[in-house]
Length: 190
Image (cartoon, rainbow, N blue to C red; front, side, top):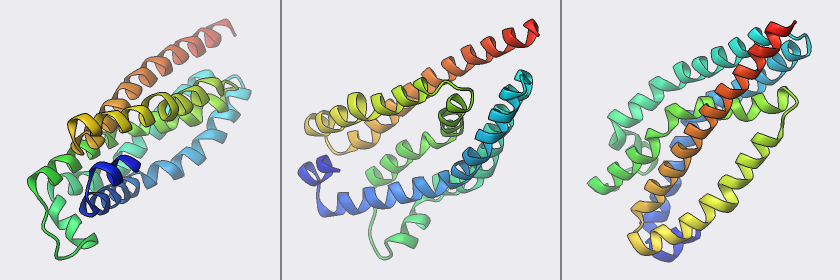
């Protein structure tokens, strides 16, 4: 990340790399479930089994959350133990731990987000997933990650990421709820 290189130290870059790897590791179960969700939703959508489409989404999102929660809890409760596995012998400041926890706090919200990004294309509506994916990067993430750390410090890379993704998570929950309502209306018309 260019902001880390420009405003931070080598330690900041190494720490962010470690945080991002831990974060991705905690999301790994979601990636596998996303691949399984798409045909499940697609087949049921094609068969006009709209309640099954909705229940499949919920089951997969809850399963992803349940699978990832133990690792996530361990990282939140014992961050320095996890850090020492990846960067042994390094000293970590309280601000490092705080930044890590801010960044990781988002993880339990992501099963719904990731499942939604798979769900929309499976029901022949890829636009929301595409727009959200592009908008997150081009209009939110890149500008804010350049501006916030410059004026408020490196911790805003973590805080900004959290704020962007929590805002998008809330939006996605709203959009998915709306989509479920539309699917239920299709179900009643059959």
